[in-house]
Length: 224
Image 1 (tube, rainbow, N blue to C red):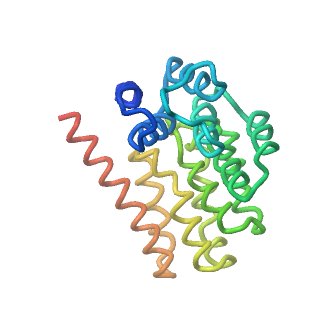
Image 2 (spheres, rainbow, N blue to C red; image 1 turned 45 degrees about the horizontal axis):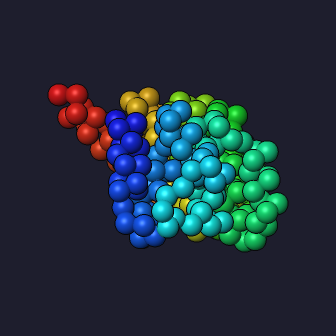
Image 3 (cartoon, one colour; image 1 turned 90 degrees about the vertical axis):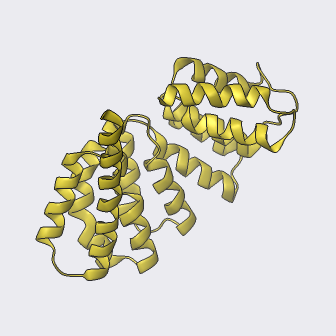
């Protein structure tokens, strides 16, 4: 399904009026959902200038979007992110680099992104938000499976030691919702059963759980 969506988005981008906002948005969304070797080849060609669309300017921000799509598919990594940051060491560039780094689609990459936010508390709010977004950006959610245990083990400390705003960002943003599995439901329910106190924290976890339960119902309907 995601492959078909990516193909359709690239087709829409090619058909869109030159230099139009729709063309730009189709390319951005295509980069966000790229999932095949053909998609990777297209992103690479757009980013390095060997292919183009009429009127489409690959500015610094769009170049970051294309790079994140490559990182998502394992076609780029820390070296390419560092190089891009060296060319755009601005506040926006630092946020884009944090998001791209957290998008690295391996268990090690996701654990590193999680640790960068939970084991340290010196990141600016904007970096925290962008890292959490990249952390959840996956094609194959299996890379998040080993993070789930760390997530539940860290909840109480996050709530106790961080400001409400940052704690909410971490508790919602680092919940491994892309897994959308019965195992995640069971882990979440077990944590709730073992932690009857702190109603505000429980509310956030319950809302996370509700999202996964909705996803599972949709999956069941699709299979029916």
